[in-house]
Length: 184
Image 1 (cartoon, rainbow, N blue to C red):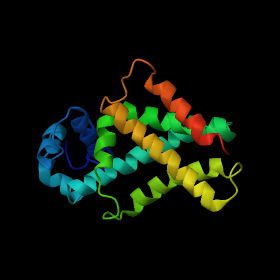
Image 2 (cartoon, one colour):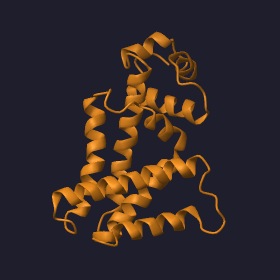
Image 3 (cartoon, rainbow, N blue to C red):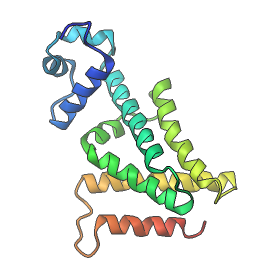
């Protein structure tokens, strides 16, 4: 691959492949996968953390596109439940990538593109809650509770911790959403 055909999108795609193959996300491994010299990657990403941030930004941007398409025409509790289930299903479909994203240290990385992407997801959830929860503080708390529920579900299912035969992970998640949304 020549430098003329290399792009951030191709680098991210190859990096995601490495993650899914459970290979270390290094520029050496990435350059080998792309068939280039590792120095070429530095023209796009200064280090592995910047690459992880690019992967995370792509992850959230794609999630937003999917949510926008799948939530079209939905409102109220139905939309919030769909938001939560779509978010979990999307992350579980690329759990190893989600793990990498969860490993990015919060509060220490300030990347404008990543901040915008993450905020778009948060804003979408708050907008879904707004008609049912006009109080801003309560809406913030419920939004945070739902995000915790979603991330917890992703982590526990991904790590194989929700395997009780008495109730499926999906059914218990739906029940937790019902409980969470019961008072609004």
